[in-house]
Amino acid sequence: MLTSRKALVAVVGLLVVTSLLPIRYAKWVGVLPTMLARNLSVPVSDPVSWASHKIRPTSSGPVEDLSAEQWALQKQDYDRLNRELWAINKDLRETLAALEAITININPKDVRPVEAGVVNFNNDRNNPVMLINQGTRVGIAGDDPVVFRTNLLGFVEREPGLLNCNIQLVSRPGFNLAVILQPLGAPPGEGVVEDRARAHASGQYFYVDRSLGHGVEPGHIVWSNDDRYPNAKGFLLGRVTEIAKHPDRPLDTERIIIRPDVPIGLQGRVMVITQRED
Amino acid sequence: MNWIVFAIAAYLAYALQQGLGHFWRIGDHEPLLPLILLVFIALQGSASTVAWAAILLGLLVDIETQGVTDLVGPWALGFLAAGYTLLQLRNLLFKDSVFTIAIMSLVSGVFAVLVPTILYAMRGIGFLTGEGIADFSAAQQLFDGFLMLVYTTALSIPVGWLLLKSKEAWGFGPRARGMR
View 1 (cartoon, helix red, strand yellow):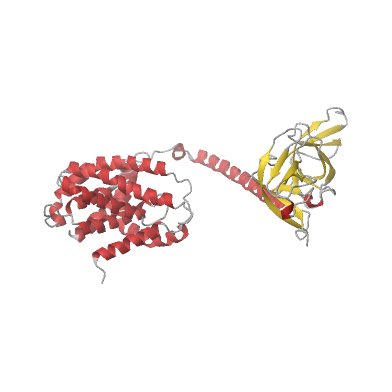
View 2 (view 1 turned 180 degrees about the horizontal axis):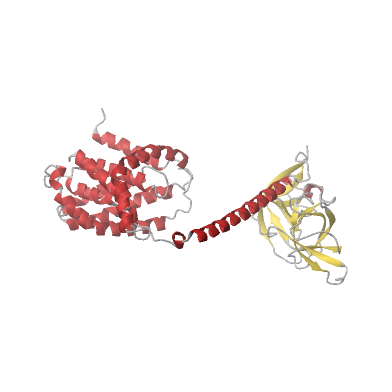
C-alpha cells in the first residue's frame, strides 16, 4: 500500500505531467472535476452571486434604456449591417477561391523548386541585385525565375556560381516582361489583356501603356506570360493600383500602374524554379 | 486536522470565490480565498496535512480560475510550494495572530503565483510541449498576481480572524516545539 509520502510524490509527478500536457489533452483532464465542482457549488454560489449582483448591480448601458421603437430601429441597423458583412464575407470567399484557382502555368513535373536563403541585397536603384546561397551545384541555371510564394522577384544571372548566385530583380529600371492582366476572381481566359509591363525608373512599380478603352481597372492582377521565361509563367508580378494619364500622350493613352504585392528584395528565403533534369 | 471541517471550509471558499466574483472584483483582480485558508492550515497543521490540503486547495483554484488555460495542476503545485514555504517559516511566527496570516498570505502567495507562471512559460519550450500560450506574458501574469496578493492580504485580516475563531472545530493536534 502506498505510504502518504510515496502517494504525495506520485501526485506531484502527476500534476507536473498534467501541467505540461498539450492543451487538447489537458482539456479532457479538467472537464470532469470542473463540472463536478461547479455543479456542487451551485447551492451556495448562486444565491451569493444573486446577492452580489443586487448589492453591486451591473452598470446599465444605454441599450437597456431604449424604447421599443428605438430598439426596433437599432435592430434594423444591425440587420442591415449583418447583411452587408455577409455580402463582404461572400465576396472575400469568392476572391479567395479565385486566388486559389490561379494556377501556376507550369507543369510541376517539369520543374524542381529549390529553396535558398538571401545572403545580401544591394538595394541599388539602378541595378538591384540579391545574392542567394545556392548555385549550380543544386541545379540552378541562368534565367531561372526566383519567387516568393506566388510573387515573381527576379531571375538568376546568366552565369551563376557553384555555391551562390546573383538574382537580377524584376524591379530594375528598363526590365520588361510579357504579362497578362485579368480581373481578380475572373474565370481562366475571361477579361484577359495581354501586354508588356515595364519597370519604372524609380524601381517602385511597373507600368503598361495602353490606348483608351483598354478595359483594365484597378484591382486587376498581373502575371507573367513571357516565352523567354517559361518557368515563370503564372507567377504574379503585382496588381493594378492606378490608371493614370500617359505623360506624353494624355489624350489617347493611359498608363496602367502595377505595384508588386511584396517588397521586392526584402525576403529572407526565396524559391528558385529550376528545370528538372531527369 | 478534521478533514470534514476542511471539506466544508474548502467548499465554502470555492463557492464564495465563484459567487462573489462580481461583487469584490476591482478591475480584473479578485482575492484568492483558498490561499488564506491554506495559510491558516499551514500555521496549525502537520506537514503531511499541509501538503495534501495545499494540493486540494490548489486544484480548486485550477478548476475555478481556468484563467490562462484549461490546465489542471499549475496552481496545485504553486500552492504546494506556498505550503512548503510556510512550513519552513512557521516556527518563527506567532501562529495565532491574524497579522501573521495576513503577512504570510503575501509571502507564501508569491510562490503560489510564481510556480504556475513558470509552468505556463515553460509550455513554449520546444522539447516540452512546444505549445506556447497565445498572448501569454510572464511579466503581466506576475504583475496581476502581485495585485491579487495585495488584495488577498487585505481580505485575509477579517477572514483570518474568523478562521482563528473557529480553530477549535478544526481539531489540529498539539504541535511540539520544533516540530514541522
